[in-house]
Image 1: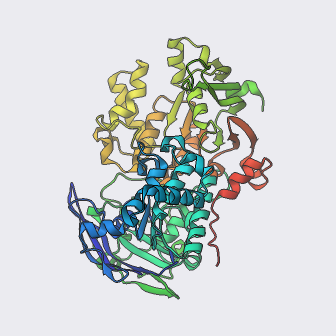
Image 2 (image 1 turned 180 degrees about the vertical axis):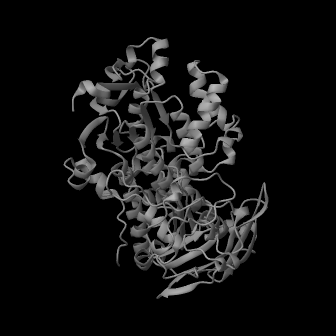
Image 3 (image 1 turned 90 degrees about the horizontal axis):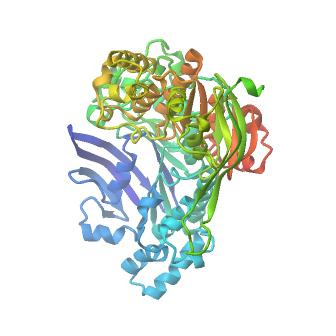
Length: 346
Length: 269
């Protein structure tokens, strides 16, 4: 249904053009759940924006995004408007800014129905109520004429999801949908998304920086770094194998319940590079404990590590714990020295 | 734990906020943000405060920082009741109290150099000469792993993790005994979060600073705190050592919080 091939995006920044995406490819079928994980600036949100034709001004995209056989990159704005909110639904991080504070929630959930399906005001309102019930907004019937500020964060996110689902999209793109929410509410929203995928056969593209959220929600995972997919595979396999050194670093750096008080977390040396500073070879080379000269020369091709599981690394199978631990790779040119990274991985 | 030796002790703290009047003739409704909190914190240790939005975590932080007056109850910091101090005495007491905020983008003034921002708490105390202030700023920047030369740069030249280091440097410059950290790593990327958590722990080992560490992330609190209080609707529902609290939670709310933490194991389907 969705086929992304060698997607490249160049953004105009204050420091000149910067390659935000450097050849991202993936595909999704109906009912698939796919996760994009990575840290700020890795290109995960740009991927979502490109899918929906919402790239910032001055951005250039190449490659191909085919949705049900239709090429989205060359589609004109009216045609894209016909897709967005209709066949592709969107949920963003901040439910407060995604909703219009001056409109009632019934109106906002009904808007795509009026726009895309041509429903009458009454029919759209009835459908909005059904949708709000569907996303388990408590007392939905009494809340139809409430304004966003009268709802809690979790309730607002349910309204955003109801609105994204209004036209029964084939694909739901959710960019950090639970990051602004408390853990117990995050759990409810994730359960809801999972249920919707199961019941409606909609595909879910979930973007998050949270490994735990991914583990719960998606079947396949793309780990992104520096505009590249550095590892991709079934979520279970990625979690078990941690093939790419970046994936491994990301896992190790996350605090887990049950660590001894005072434990120092293994950190990834250096900083996430700015897009304009990305090296020609492997984007992770400057921070990787396993780096060799060949890493810096050319971008590593994807290497197969298991069924449907690939990693872009030429040093696969090496254990960072065996690397010379006291010698982190050449310092980061752009930023001041970070003291913590002196303790290397492992 | 003897209460007399505590650096910070909080007694029966209550804070209510008045909401806008709903009816012209009705009394304005009130919301009770804190309902009688008591706890104490020894010097050099870390107390974690966990709870969800609306539990009163940030209200507690503002009261401990003496930014607001409690409705009733009192806070004794370093032997003095913070909320009965005269303005001048409060300013002196504040040198011992600093705060780190969640958002390293919002908590630094974009138009001031890092040196000015870091030295500001010292400048406000009006005891150090400009030269001494610069010297101290260079010292604390060094302590958080930044260069003295960074003092002349502006916040936009730094990444999120580096900005949080700047905020920590600013908190350290008065040589505080207590640092109130309100979600200090929530806005940071995972790899950067680890660097900042390690730094905060290193600083505690080195200079013995005490943390009141507010976070919604149970794993973070488990890692850095000696003791944890769980806040729910303005009350402490459970309190204890993190090992005990997170492995054998007693209160249903603590259990619910723990159950909601996404497991790091992918679900098989």
